[in-house]
Amino acid sequence: MSPRSQAPLSVAIVGTGLVGAELISQLLSLPSPSPFKLVSLSTSTKTVFAPEGLKITPQTWLSTLKSSSEQPDLLALPDKLSVLERAVFVDNTASQDVANLYPEFLKKGVHVVTPNKKAFSGSQKLYDDILKASKEGSARWLNESTVGAGLPVVQTLKDMVASGDKIKKIEGVFSGTMSYIFNEFSTANPGGPAFSSVVRIAREKGYTEPHPGDDLNGADVARKLAILARSIPSLQSALPEGYTSVSTRSLVPDALASVSSGTDFVDRLPEFDTEFEKLQRQAREEGAVLRFVGVVDVEKGVVKADLEKYPTSHPFATSLGGSDNIIMFHTERYSPRPLIIQGAGAGAAVTAMGVMSDLLKLA
Image (cartoon, rainbow, N blue to C red; front, side, top):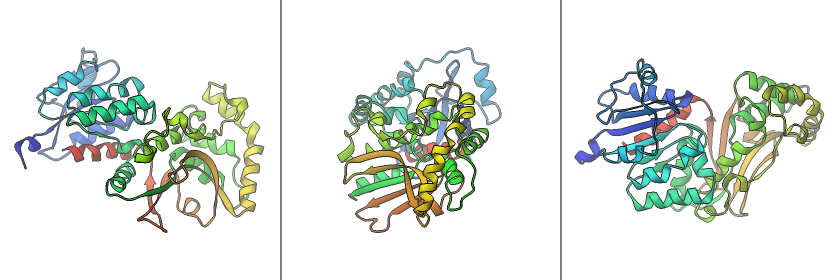
């Protein structure tokens, strides 16, 4: 191993919310000698930067950041990191503005690791710019935690493609929120809670966004499908507008589409329980359950997020619990029995672990 590869990887983190804070804690808790050196922490209003490594611990990093008088300048950060021997930019935000900067970091030889879905599920131009910048330099971009949090979904797909396997279809329950809602609402036994009641409880438990419509509109699933589809060569340009090109069924009633308050949305949702109960009853009469799934059908050229029926014997009906994700890979090698990946698909700890796994690939 060369001295260069043994040098600690300089890590610059932007975003210190739930996932960011958990990642910082995980990094600072690694046994010595660590393969990483934290050199920068940034929020939207404050930053700290020390090329030799920040003198912080799991107990002091937050107070150090809060006491800083320096304001972040992400436009200047690529140049500051490029002079370090090895550096990686970690974006823990959900910001489009931050995502737009990925090509600049990559051009400067700075790796990019992120759970932010925006860059890989948005415009084709930004995605192409990221690919071009990475190919022209020596920097890599890794985004395992954009789909399935800490589950090995993205890398599994990339390994399949790289090794020459033929992807036929990917289907799964990609939203922890939708998983919980339909695990509770659509069961083999009648007499369960109303749809609006399940959504309300999910919101109270923190499973949904503050406005549940942001989950029920299917956009999160569509973004994950766009990310996976773009990892398949034949579909790389099939979604010119990214996730908005995905055929997506929204479960937000038309009459509630303009309701901006999450509380008002939940209060009015019972008005539509009859419609959801009808869908549930139809499924039960067919010996099936309802699941909100994402499908990337390579052979048919179809990418969609929709509410589908599955037999009560299907893994999507029998294997899911809580807010689990489950993803099936139907490929030439994994046929007729698909490869199934299942587990917690949301939460700060597992998402940060997904980011950490990408960092370890670079270390």
